[in-house]
Image (cartoon, rainbow, N blue to C red; front, side, top):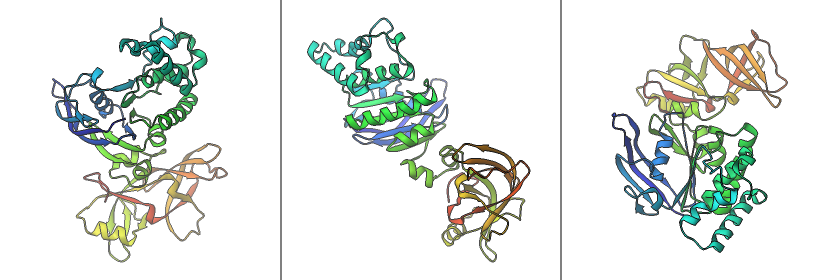
Length: 365
């Protein structure tokens, strides 16, 4: 396998639109890196640049230590799995998987061995003689992956490969892709808009927004320590609650919600020192739904007075949608907690679990 390095990679189209703004990224040999972001974030364009399907406007791209800015796709030793299966309908599964190997004029015995090995890894040996129309969606995606595996490339590229599958198949294929990657010890760059795919598959995640990298880190680093408001709300489901306010240092340092003096959260010593060292006037407090705990009126900790708008019982938990400090918030609750709309509930907060962001820069403090 190979190391993939992007240094200041940019893509500007003829109409002046900047799709990718100077991406710096190193994908280590054997690493599984996921590019995640909403539509238009530049993640697929970045992947296509690595594949050679899009040209660079600026920067440098290297695969295995070799600069490939001007190297055509077929000479980069990569294999790409697309969102659409792109299988030849008139060919059998075997023929689809072997096609690229025939073009390379490999010996028939080697082609046979590679296809059979990939089919065994993917669990599709029994369907090698079928045509694509005779396969399920999951089987077609396995064939598309198998077509990439048989080429034995240095880098695998996946462009939203599971988006056409139903929810159950997506879960199954995520598990299959993770297993295949472990067996092949492959270098993988994977694009998705689905944060669940990103969190469950990636060794590291690159969060992109409007052509820029917002943050790079392990799944838990992004979840526990988001560096921007965008990452805070994009990673995690339900999304992090955001409440506008300011820091007050007279007496006990605390965060006070804008326009609602009844809601305040004490600041920890470390939080107070960091906030006091900045010139920030407007803050945003970020609170994960699981860090809001429904308590009774006698609770002595930091609480938010909230009114229930709606609830969603999910079996293992209940999601509560509430109004607090004049804003919408979401809380996770025990499945046996099922308040009615209009009920007033105090929500307890652990001050150490609150994230603070500068409203102006949208960056973590």
